[in-house]
Image 1: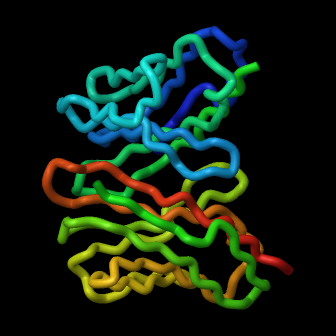
Image 2: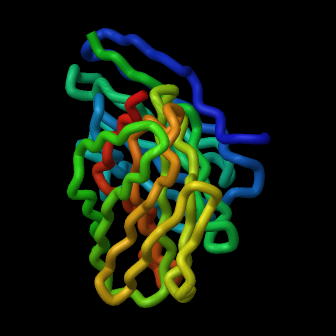
Length: 114
Length: 116
């Protein structure tokens, strides 16, 4: 696609429910990142996929968080048993390895846990 | 591990004036990229400028320029002739260009307000 696409744009869920956030990267981009941004705060790294390598999961805050990247393309971030502190904007970014190092971002998913 | 520090949580500037945002980083790598990203209220992250560490010349993009001091590990952003549309959160970011530690690391951001 022309840009990084994230869906849904906004998600309101009840505490304890599971949610799935989706990221469609720019075609051909090999690297994909997920970040979390709390209101007015910086970017918290969650997970990084690079080609067929094992993902860097070092930023996932708990075992309720997991992510997949299917066929090196679409990625899904899953949060199980959501808590109110999970409320944030979740941003996806992709780049073309070191060839084009700058990352391109989606518009994010604003998750609200009530 | 690389760290990126933005020491100014908030700044303000009058329209048409010049403002400089600070960024320092810590790394043991010699080859890397540095970026400034802008995040307006729309939430969309936009690349402002990019600098390769091996280049001594400071990058410029229209009204935006950087002061890259490799030895001091400093990478400040200068915005000239500030415009109301420059109001945004600005993030400094680091990316290693070699080895296996290839993770885009961001600072905590500086909220810039341009006043009319």
